Amino acid sequence: MAEAEVSAAGAGLRITLAVSLVPGEVRERTLHLPAGIRVADVLADHVAVGATLYGIWGRVVAPEQLLRDGDRLEMYRPLTVDPKVARRERFARQGARTTGLFARQRPGGKQGY
Image (cartoon, rainbow, N blue to C red; front, top):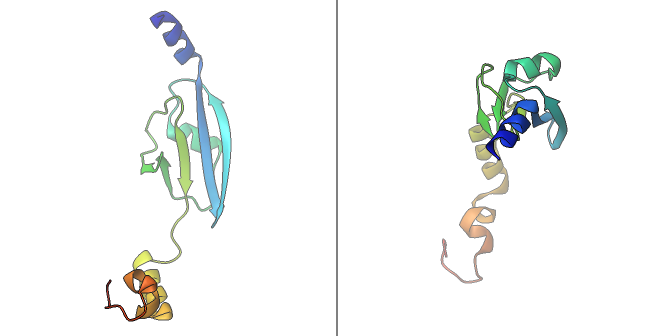
């Protein structure tokens, strides 16, 4: 049984490559690659314009990271707006009464309940 698992693992890897070039759209491709391949080797063939960081299952990794069978390699594009600034602007636009705890306030109820 162990010999069959080793030979199957040595045959190659199946990974998912996920790229999001525009907000709200994710393109996924399944790749069959040889065992012992690194993230940098995959990126050399599948370069996404504007991608600056790469990760496996949501965790940023170095290009030297070895891939394993079943990994999801993700290419991240840079943020266009700082999340803290966006939250502040959204809060100012919506006002204090329509966000967070106050959005579902009962008529005549105290603030925060």
